[in-house]
Amino acid sequence: MTVDFHFLNVGDGDCIIVDIPERVLRSDPSVEFPARMMMIDTHHHDDHDDYEDVVRYYLAHFSDSQGRPRPLFRYIQSHPHTDHLKGLSRLSRNIPIVNFWDLEHSFVPQKNGPGWDECRDDWECYERLRTGSTDPKVLRYSDADSPREYWKDDGITILSPSKDLHTAVHKKDDGTLRSPDEIGQELNDLSYVLLMKVNNLKILLAGDAEQRAWNHMIQNHRSEITNIDILKAPHHGRESAFNEEAVKIMRPKHIIMSASEECEYMVPEKYLKASPTSKIYKTCEQGTFVMSCDFDGGITLRRS
Image (cartoon, rainbow, N blue to C red; front, side, top):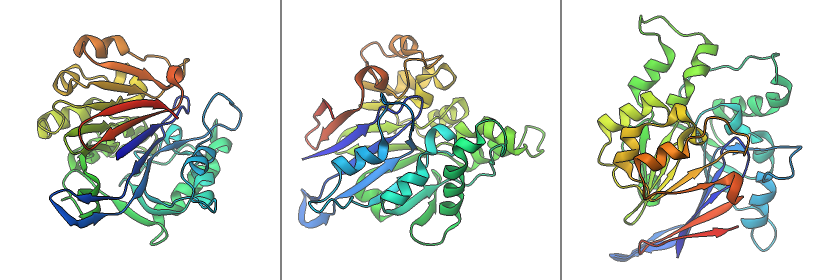
């Protein structure tokens, strides 16, 4: 029995699907945990056959015998930049979403500007989802929130964002409010950073967290980020999100970079210098792949 982390090859964007199996508590077999599906971000291309079609992939791998898709118990929007929500409208039309994790933020993209027509439907879908009251249920958390029932069941700890990061992203050093465009430039540091545990295995899904967020985690969550088994590198492995001290603390055994071959500023060499025993996997080289984590501490990589 494994928890399977699907890292989809979606170009310069992110899409992670987590298949959490039905299981019982070893210490008390009367305690049962239901199977659940979880997705972090989506990125869809209409015109690139080399990249994964997120909806098509999900329907092919996670449908029942009647062809009905398994509901997404938890969809997490790590942060609302286009490369993390492109295709959200199509996703929500085809796959039921039970819980929608959003952030508290005041970011608004430049409407009617370059690229707006391409992302209009997805942004409008995002706004509808985040302002709804039910179906899906909208949830917003920070690292200050105590674990709720389902977090504990699924082994999730939120390491970021924090109240201080929210303030820093929305206000300048002099206390004046940032404009929506300026907030957009700082928004990576408001990304959800999630630590998932499969018994003793530690999987860190880091969104696009950059330096403020890493400094926060080093100061406030050092023990949680020590000795990581799998790290989804922040911001597609770009230099802007590389924090040498954090990587030395994490010493990740496996590092995943979700990016295209054309992605600029990836720095795998810096990760390896800080953590020489790490193994790096790029979606642009591996294609879509799965990291299967079993409850006895084993990790297996397989092509999907």
